[in-house]
View 1 (spheres, rainbow, N blue to C red):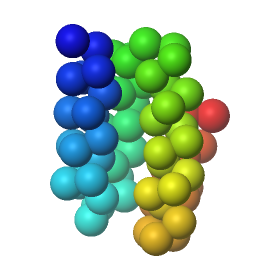
View 2 (cartoon, rainbow, N blue to C red):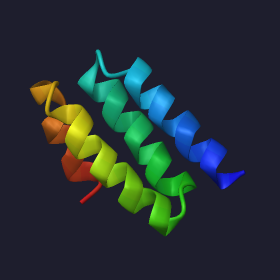
View 3 (cartoon, rainbow, N blue to C red):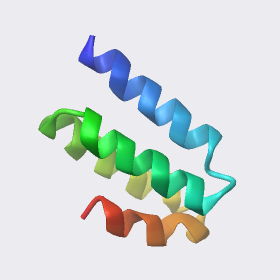
Length: 64
């Protein structure tokens, strides 16, 4: 079941990536809900995902 939460989190972040403020809000929720090893996976995915969307790189400060 935790994998489902991780996948759901990624899909939500992809859907709200048009708005950096909303993206940061959903990222904060993800930090509260995911397990530590899932957060590490999410960090790696975010580095890949935000390469194409430079306006979201400031939001990564939330997760570090």
